[in-house]
Image (cartoon, rainbow, N blue to C red; front, side):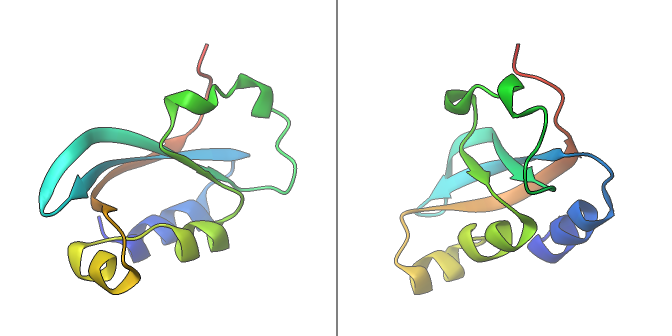
Length: 99
């Protein structure tokens, strides 16, 4: 999936928090496979107490926050002066619980 496909999938979801599974890379190599990025789809999710923050790479407050804050691809990382970036979006699903 590319970033636009992920944003479309997030926009179509009917839950309060979505989970995006992806690979995080540095310098062209995957360093953190199958990481989780959470995206709040409502302003105040009722199930945010089910999240263990240390179990996720990042938590975006909205789809716009995801779009602006998540760097996708090595070229974008170079332009943004980032060391780590998303190299592959694998799955978008409803977040259930970390417990």
